[in-house]
Image (tube, protein in one colour):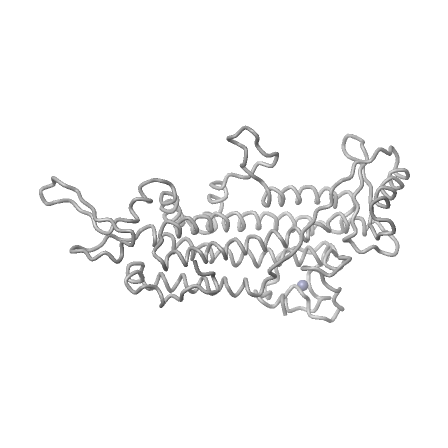
Length: 388
Ligand SMILES: [Zn+2]
């Protein structure tokens, strides 16, 4: 199967196949994939994420807790530069968070602790968005290549998976944005409010990234149960419109051993005038079978195109929202400027009169990455200028 970068162009589809699908439809698909390829080309092709794990401590007071985590880290990394902070669980037990990824300030103020508590959310958010973008690009590419080869069922499987992923990304990306907006608007975080947000936002993100249904039927379900995909598609339909159900239902029917999966091979069918016989001609490449009567419409193939084009149409704003969110969260919390080593998503703090790296076109001093301001994307932000 050709890679996406090597995919055939719309006018390289077999002319008969193209005619059967409808040349406008094929063109729409081609345009969607071209737009998607442009975004993928301007996005990183790798990133790293990390999460700071609570280390349980035996100490019962803050001073000895601090000494305990220092000793613990020293044992594994003598002389290393680690940021450390300790806290108390609801049950009264103490824990520590420690990181050599967070640049050590010369002296530690409460705002550094708050910034540290929000730090790992930044890299996780970037990786979450990139994984969705890459997933979508791979499925859209394989849907396209399958359609060009008239492999309708693999195209349907790819298009369905693409649509479900985009539904999740659009819905959950929006929810993450709303949650961040509420927190950011509430003003400078305290250590306690940063800890509470870290937990709530982190829980939503980890469910979206790593929730699973594996083990549900075999009696060993995972602790993090993934939201039902139909719930996400239903929420997405409110955004994308109910038209998606037509395509989605056909795709589901095609990838299950149901009517849809048999009908893709039917070239012609009909009832004898006597009413005595119903007959069908089937062919692996149904569009190319010479027939005496008109062929039936390739409903599943058309649904695969419509779903792919619709999914890409909604993926692109969801991806831009994710980039904006990572940028705004990174600069507002300071996470973008606090990486101990340069990485995807890290930035040198801009000077006040520099153009803001978020892509708004504003000067950094006039942009919106301050506590107390709303987290909505400025209207002037464009899809590409964040990389300028
Ligand atoms: Zn900005």
